[in-house]
Amino acid sequence: MSELQTQLASDTWITATWDEYIQIIENPDYEKAKGYYHNGQMRIEIYALGHDHACDNTIIAFAVNLFCTIKGIPAKGLTNCTYRKTGFKEAQPDVSYYIGENADVIPYGTSIIRLDIYPAPDLVIEVANTSLADDQGEKRLLYEDLGVKEYWILNVQNVQVMAFAIENQGSRRITESQVLPGLAISLLNDALRRTRQINQSQVGAWLLTQFQQ
Image (cartoon, rainbow, N blue to C red):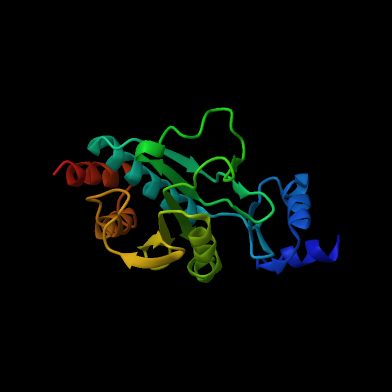
């Protein structure tokens, strides 16, 4: 194992060239890993995702999909999709969305979404169980630089969504989604708390009544 591969075991940002990053992320040994590249550093996430992360990932995507369906908002949701600005930046967020006029901008048959050709997603969601500090820090800066319009961090431990509107390569906390008008972040937090007590179908039924009001 190379020195670079040894450093990857720490799941932290390490200095690397773009070519070194591509060599690692395209290695079959890292087929199931998530890769990020920003400001001459890369992060390869190779840890297994457990129940809590997976559960919250599922319910937050369900909530967004349901809201868009009921409100008639065009949307395309993508799970663990790769966004690449060749030579400079790459991200694989847990969940991402193209919304409104961008909902159909990415054609089927596309593998890696190349941001030299296509726009960045409107909404990016990272589910943070063990990666909260990084999601609030370097990844937040990465999404600011990529030109994402809105960024949510789902804090699994605190059962909370932290939402940020992004503009002019900066971000600010918001209490209502800007890309999904009318969707209060507090309602998402209520839904998350309910998943700790009842199953997802019951939470979904509750969300349905809330979104129909």
